Length: 125
Image (cartoon, rainbow, N blue to C red; front, side, top):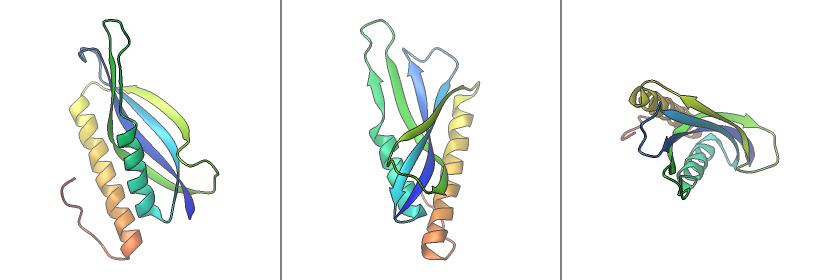
């Protein structure tokens, strides 16, 4: 088992989303057998951390998981711990999300290559 540092990206939507698109980039510690398992574990963490906050005011906050965009092997001690978080505002939300998904697809393909030792095609991402 090894430690990895994964960057997860979430979209933050306040109220009806009539604001500059915001994205939260979080660094998380992942404990897994290898890069492929770390990637999938990070995705599961992200999907499990989607939040819908009902604030009791006119503004509700929704956190939507986009994908995992970075993965680095480490030597650490806290599985799933958030290391860093950055809220980003992007003028073009769809372009930003496409770039996140492209980076995630490339990361998955690299992890599959490391795991199997052969080049793999990623389908459906």
